[in-house]
Image 1 (cartoon, one colour):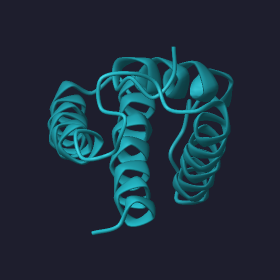
Image 2 (cartoon, rainbow, N blue to C red):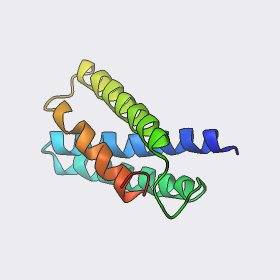
Image 3 (tube, helix red, strand yellow):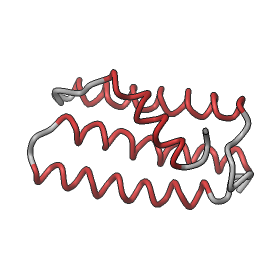
Image 4 (cartoon, helix red, strand yellow):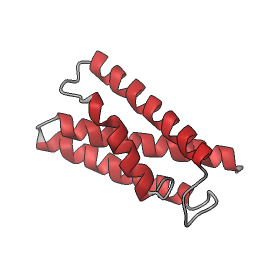
Length: 112
């Protein structure tokens, strides 16, 4: 798999993890929260596997890569959350999207 494809799969999985973290914050039902936590864990683990294949592995990516990856993740997360709102989901806070994305990218050593 080439680098661009690795990055796209990484973006999809980390986006899914962030989406479910935000959805978990939006609800107050424990049984649903547990399902979101499981989804976060699964997507996070897959994202880690793909991150380990993207060079440089042990340090942040270039500034241009950082910004492009962050932009794509933020756009994916916001688009999916809008779909969820259209389906009747409530209490979704768009103001936390960038903070959650930044945190995820720092943990994955994409950004400093």
